[in-house]
Length: 505
Image 1 (tube, helix red, strand yellow):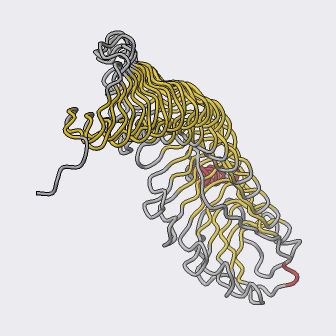
Image 2: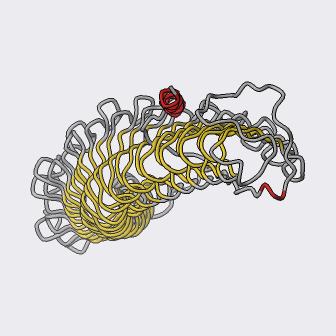
Image 3: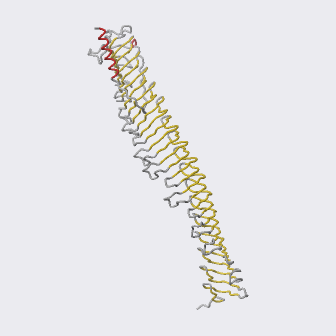
């Protein structure tokens, strides 16, 4: 009969242990250490047994003697209340061995210290939490309301367990379920952030080392973002894959590649999701600090590509940009220097219609010295401009040669320009040998100038020097003829009027 009772009581004890549930998942959050120091009961006064003789749980051990003694309080069940500082009011009820808490027991922290209101229920060994147990944090402590259920060793979380953040703070509702070592998350575990956290709904599942996420893991945000890969110091680090969730403006986009300190770093491939404005586009190249950097290749679903140097996500340095279908620049190609995403420096631009420009750029526009050649499909086919530009326009000094398909074929202008027109001092040479040297305004001869008729002209040998307006001789001027005739005076719309100023009416 005694043996049978022993077996029944042992079964009840095991059922108590099994009642503590363990879930094996992965996690993150605040690390909490509970140190249960070994108590020397010869240094404290022990209170009498509880008025109620009813035990808080069943034990197969006999009751301890009424008076405490290290030698007699062994392999027995007893209740004691401490009456000296700093543990005044604390109490223990449970099993003992050699005068120390050992086996199953409950400890109530009632003393006026940082543990006030805490409670531990579970297994003990030589006066410390060891085995399986539950720790409840009191209402007056830093972690008020929190709870840990799991394995212990030498007074610290150690093994597999679950930590519930129930205190009224930003971590309320957060939980950790998994492995621990020496009071710290260690091994495989899951941490879920509560509703008040700035990471509400986020969850980490994976490896931990001494309280930090480290190794392989999976992080899911409350908005549905997912990271899978290696982790170091609580951040993605090494190789991993990131998928943007449905609430993100990049929903469905993916990144596969290297990480450093939580950011894309090293070689990686970013693909835009199907519902983004850049759906199907892809970047394949180097990253630094979460942005494309150094060198890479951008491929758009419409055929637009960029291959070259990059800084902070923008073309920077030397590269090649080709515009795909659907773009207003479809078929155009630029090879040259970029600064902060814009054509700046020396480069070559080829247009889809066959036009080409080689020269200098500034902030995406032709600026400085360059050469523009009109292609076969241009209405100015064969024309060439070589000279200075400002904000994409001929401006400064330059030379324009009219091509064979132009109605001005063979003509050449060399001089000053403004806003795409001859303006200032210049020389216009006609294909028949005629030459004008003088002033221009908005593309027309205006001001003082000399016009000399060439050998192919029927007026060969004639020469005019004087004032011009709107491409015609207007004002004071002198024209000499091949036969020696001279007309000097006032000219109006290319006609000589009189040799001196007309009389005042």
